[in-house]
Image (cartoon, rainbow, N blue to C red; front, side, top):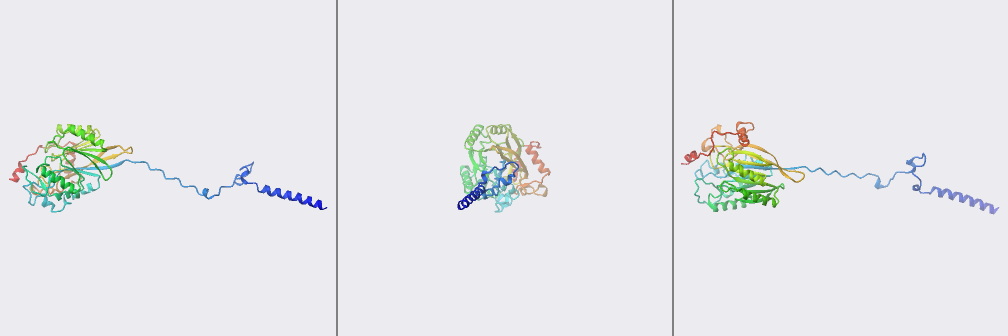
Length: 389
């Protein structure tokens, strides 16, 4: 009997253990789906923390876009009247009256928002009274360099026919004044690199050479600037004939040669009037930008001037090219002729934009597109000499 009870207990224990072992079989060893079984039951979802929330995908990298730069170009600046008008109520100093911001007060907004502004400085900056053998000479105090700073001018060329009005001594004083005020400048037959605050690496070459810039010297300078890493090259030339409204054959030849050699922009001065803009083989030639804040004459024969703002594009591949230009037609003075301001009382040396669509505005455009036809051309100094006699 006892043995029978032991046998029955043993059989029951074996049966119970079998059930427990069956219940403890790992879920992973069971197929996810057998027959018509529900997969959701046979393969429960992963509830681990790492799988609870999918990670955010990173934002896509924005596609690169071209970058645009603006180079502003203006004409001759003579920040003084000549010796015959010095000390009179019509002089540059009297009009400015100690306010360095005055000469650019009606146009500074165009130069504050650009990337680079270039001009021609056609006077001596010196505090000493120097001797000059010239019929007309122009000397301003050294602190008049502040006019350029207040006006937003970033670079001036001194390669022109008035740079030696007071000999090398006067020129040295001018360079020192510009250096003391932190204003970059160009000398005769000099090539240099200027990098704008916005990162455009400019190469600038300046030449006068008695109104005949040397093509071979320019080509060598352009090659040098490219080798030094210049991205955009400007040739600043002082050339042409006074008060002729179209470039002569020499200007055209020299201007084309500069672009052929690799320049992007040719900037011309001297003629005291505007001459046409030419687009040539991807380059831009401004044959003459006329006068700007010009103390050289209290009543200039031609009062028209302009700001030309050249758009320069850096493409997504890094290449640099011209991308058009904008013209802002201006008058050299803020005083309209038809309001009684004549003779010595006319020029207040404060360039002012013309009203868009006005006759004067359209006249400026015609001078820059080459369609303007003057009644007469060439400078006649008889009125100037008469007024100073």
